[in-house]
Image: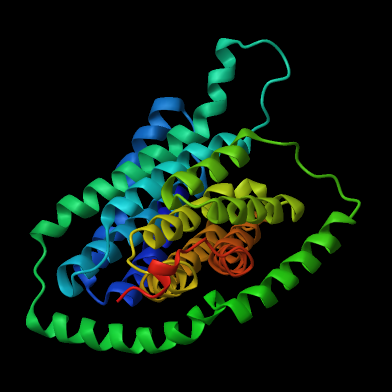
Amino acid sequence: MGLLLVLLEWLALAFAVAWLFLRHAPFALLVAVSPLPGVFFASWLIDRSDPSQYTFGFCCSLLMAGALMRRDLFAGGDWRTVAWAAAGAAITAIGLYRPPAHNFAVEDLLRWRPVVLLLFSALSAAGFVTAGRRFLSFGEDFIARANRTAETRARTLEVAAQIATPRWALALCGIAMVMAALAWFDISPRAAFRPGFVLAVVAAFVLARDWRAAVAAAASVALLWLFRADAALPFLILPLLLLAGASRGREERGPQAWQRTLEEEGAGLLFAALGGTALLALAAPDATWLAAMEAFIASLIFYPAITVALWSIFPPYRSIEELYRG
């Protein structure tokens, strides 16, 4: 009975966040329950569960719902970018455990349990949101309401996206360097190097096809490690890879591309960050929710800022024809 009450509390909170984002009650309920089949199946399969599993699935389902809605209503949004980001973030969960110090044994396969948990949660979230959305109706009242909400959020995000301008990006890089220096001289022990760190950087490069995005990903992961929040690595990688993939698909390049990407993806990522942090605070009232909050801050603020700063310091070579074309 106690477990059922906890589950209902999670669903109620997830539904509230999803409704505030989507403003469509049946769609919000679908987003809240979509990760559950994957959570239950993975828990039965490997006899383990984790509060972060449902939270990660909820973030994936919320971002997938936002991408599908923008595609249908505003001819924008790409659900494939969300899918690739979720898969990449789940795989980097191998970094939650240290690599074995002895010869490989069958027991070492259990180190992949976090990956299995997050992958099933993400697959369930994406699959049920995509399939269930076809059975929902979106009337004219909802479309008008969605347009008004999108206009209001766009004005707010235009201001927030200024972190992707060179001036603010360089300032935020300075703040990140100060924070990293203070954390470096802290004497508290840190976790050892983990494979998920390398996987995160490689995934960012593959999606963005830009060495600046890969270096910025490495810096963001390093910040998370310095602040001993690397247990929340998947919650850093999910928005990080989503931003990397979305920026690559734009016609603009450099700071303009990252600014437009933040304007378009910012609402969904902010609601996912708020909802994910609140769910972890409710489910695991220890340092887990604080680590997740630090992960979201590193990915939504410092990652685009560092990338844009690198674009400003190391602009790509452009020929005279490109500079004066058109």
